[in-house]
Length: 204
Image (cartoon, rainbow, N blue to C red; front, side):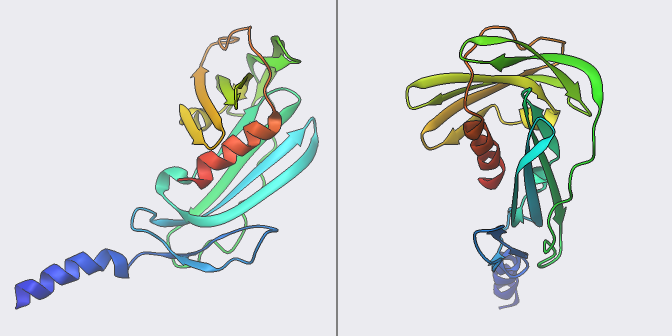
């Protein structure tokens, strides 16, 4: 009898001790509570800020359950536009009641990568900033239309080699040398790129 109770207790223990976290996308709904699955052992807040030049054009915030590997900081700089991701994770019930912090200001670090301007011109230069130590190439196909984004990125943005998003297929490649991300390519939509970045972190 005691052995049976022990086995039942071990089976039910993960269910009884999973976290409760807020889950929402700011501006679309309230933040109701959710019971996290066992593999999501933290509560997280994620913030994706998009800049056009020096002007902020969007500030997307979300809250949900998270795994340790979801708690990333990073940036992707494609020249005229830059995407900065910040996140905060915690490990007590409903602890993700605040938004992730604004990213710190950064300065050029001396590394240079190619960027794409126009339909077939990927010979422009991006001056990488902060901890952007990788040159990145994102190949995107929406429907039958291919495109490429190039620029600077932090290592965290290079973790996903292939993103699976309905209607979009993509491949990410990164390298460390100056201008190592090649010259040729077609430019892709910034909206598509922002969608890919959010899908990468919200789908985990």
